[in-house]
Length: 239
Image 1 (cartoon, helix red, strand yellow):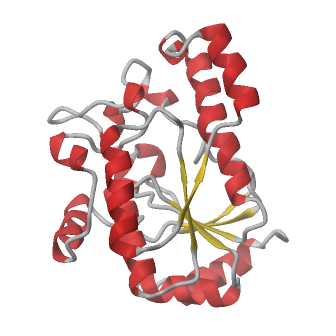
Image 2 (cartoon, rainbow, N blue to C red):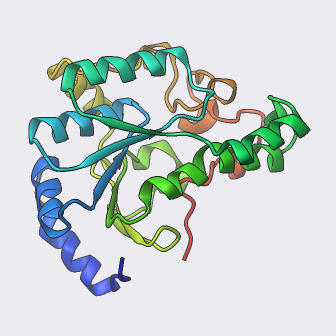
């Protein structure tokens, strides 16, 4: 996709800023037909967006990254989502030519041993499959919320992703947790039951735990690492 100027991106943002999620996604779909993809991890936020896509019958492709280390509850809500909405969700898996030698050399739980090992594991299981999922598309829709991480407080709702050469749109960026939960309850949307057990940000099972009262939203992810290192590479800012 051709690089979009800051001015053009700002103009696009103004055109959808006052719209609801469904209408904003429709505008983007009209501008970039067949070129919108939504990455879902079946979190509560992602379930809200999936519901909006399904309710509006929007021409947006859904995909997920199956790392091979997900919770059983995540697979269960994945299945419930397929049953509820009937929308195809394309799964992307790690490249075995990268994963097999890494596990053979370092073992299945190497990510606990060093930050470098953990980031390599994330690169293989998440970042490389994501590159394949996004290739050839114009807009990547995410469920990111500013409340989830201090690093996301100044994140624009619509931004240019230089690494993947497309637009990123975060429709729920300014939603708070209560709003997400209320929407889920109001529309009886299937969601991951781990959220009810203190899991805020749900990733791979070995790398995710419930958070304790007063802890940061990201405290449950890679809890053995320093907070400043807690990104897997999917949403790292690159220019």
